[in-house]
Length: 72
Image (cartoon, rainbow, N blue to C red; front, top):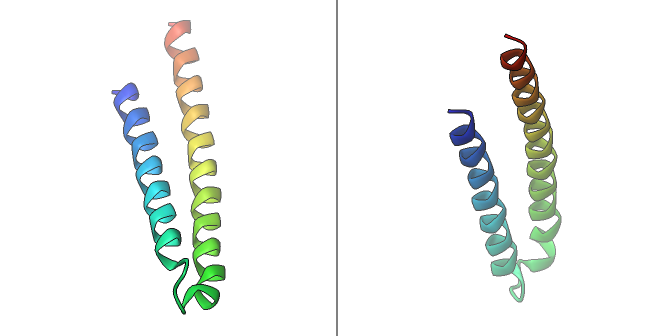
């Protein structure tokens, strides 16, 4: 179950990151490019920070539960 959660979490992050890349790429070369760039980059940066923190929490929980099962 832990492995499935890890794979689902990683896949979700990858899908959202690729979607953000396509969103940013779609803005390039349009008239809305200059106005929307800071917004797109801010959303992307916020996602990256939240995802990194969530990933760190998940890894710490997995390591902690691994130690507990090893002690039993």
